[in-house]
Image (cartoon, one colour):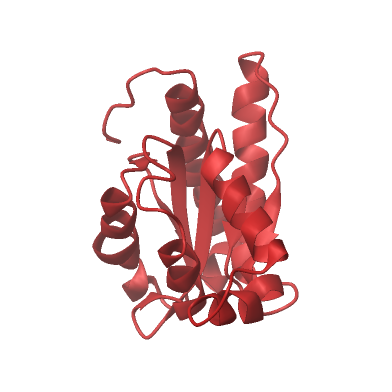
Length: 181
C-alpha cells in the first residue's frame, strides 16, 4: 500500500513513492513474492479527510482507511511543509484506529526543497509511526529536486530506495531488519 500526500500533479512525493514501490516490488520479486502496490493520493480524498473530523466518514475515505489497515506493508511519502509532514498527511493517519497498522512493515519517505529538512523523517515521521506501532524499516528516504538533477545524485537516491526496499522485503518475510550501516 502506498500513501502519498503530494499536492501537485505530478508531485515529487508521488514520484518518490513510485520509485520506492518499484524498488520494493523488485526486491520482493527477487525472493519470489509478488507485490501489487495500491496507491492512495491523499489530495483525492482531502475534503473527505477534513469532513471526517466533524461528521461521518465518507465511503471513499472508509475504503482508503480500510486498505491501509489491511495492508501487508506500507510506503508513505509526504512533502515537507514548515519543517514537518503535511497537515493532510497527519490528518489521514489521525483517522486510523490507534492499532490499525501495528507491526505493519513500512518505509517512510519525504520530499522537500532543501536537504536541511531531511531530519523530518526522524523527528516527525518515525515518532508518528512509532506511536501507531508500525514496523518502520531503518532506512528512510528523503529527496529534493537536486536528487533528480544529476546522474550521481539520482544514483544515490536509487541506492537509498533499494536499501529501504530490501529492508521492507525482509520485514515482510518476517526476518529481523538490522539497523542500516
